[in-house]
Length: 188
Image 1: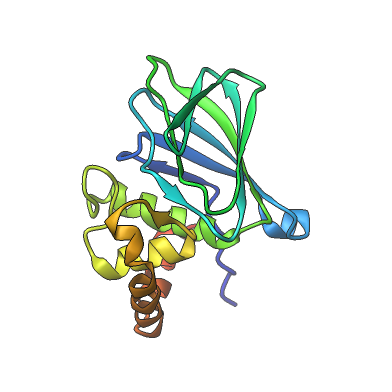
Image 2: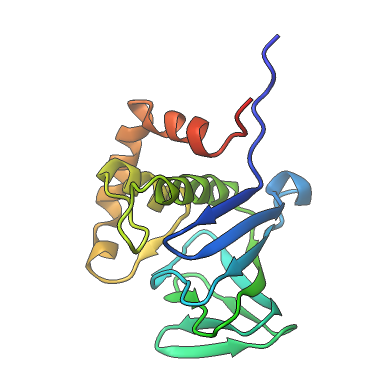
């Protein structure tokens, strides 16, 4: 009998200079929220983006976490939190000299975000992204954007409807399944 595939819990992204650990999934919380721990190395962070399916709360645990909301930068000390409402441009960063640890909570839970994270981080690790972590393959990018419900800021964000169509094509052609098997599930 074939063993069921189990999702990975730890993902490392050399482009974003961070490490994400899944602490709680939708099945753990009855769909109320997902929770992860994020370690961001000096100089690490992601690009400006928005979400429409969930709110995102960052809580600093160790070090000072930078979170930009629109044009305003917030520097969270350990124990401080900030919640990003739906449709609000934001990104996280570490402009300090030491690794920062924080908790990231998605309300409601969004397990597809974890799948997209696995794919994006795996592609970055395998050199299949730009230096900023953007997948070089358009179908991979479309899947990443739609799975994580991440609408990039700027001109690429205007292409969100096109990415949804490309992601549907990638699913139909088995690209999503292959990427999940490679990057999301533990290998036997």
